[in-house]
Image 1 (cartoon, one colour):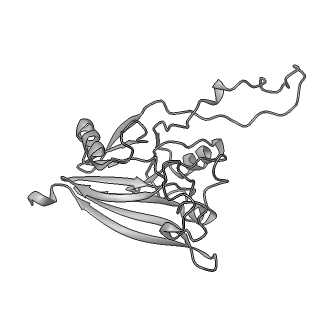
Image 2 (tube, helix red, strand yellow):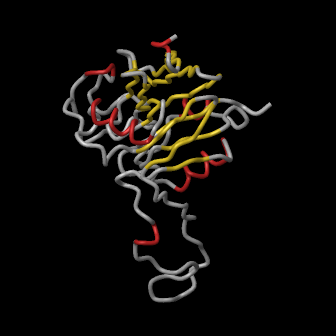
Image 3 (cartoon, one colour):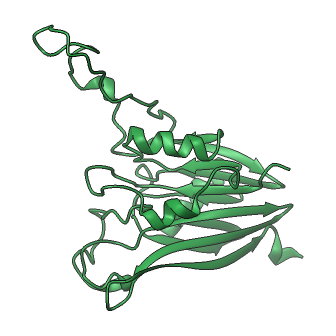
Length: 234
């Protein structure tokens, strides 16, 4: 039986702002458990793209504000250095850069839209997100850009920001350098991703967050949030 689980993650910023997805997250994310992946932009790493493709063949991407085609950068051709001499080594494999700013998928009776959100202004504004959800005609809207997890219901629609899967910082973060959100040392945000399990008109959201205690020990916490379509009218 195919898995119903949908992995949603965003804003990895590897290698610019983070080294890799945390090892404790990678240990949880194993092939065969996930049916589809929604990446909300700023994937930025060929190795992570390959990692996600082996988790689930159905990898859906939308463009983030830092997703720049690798072909745009000037580089020597494969197997040659800048002077044209053979090097005997191939460069790191590229990966397809998303061009779509938003997409919609359907699971059960729910239409789920996803976008990076850098074109939604003001960034992360609930009213602006509600307008975007109505324009996309979706029941659930996933967005990113803030690198912080959020999930809430508004006017019968469900809004999800998975945060940053690597704990990368966002330049929009007004608390940058503070000790908020359990980071403790003030050097980043809390790494997070979410799994969605849709059964009919019910979405169960599993939120995974990597936190540090006062001694620097890392633990993965899991919270659960539920949303039912048209719950107010039932």
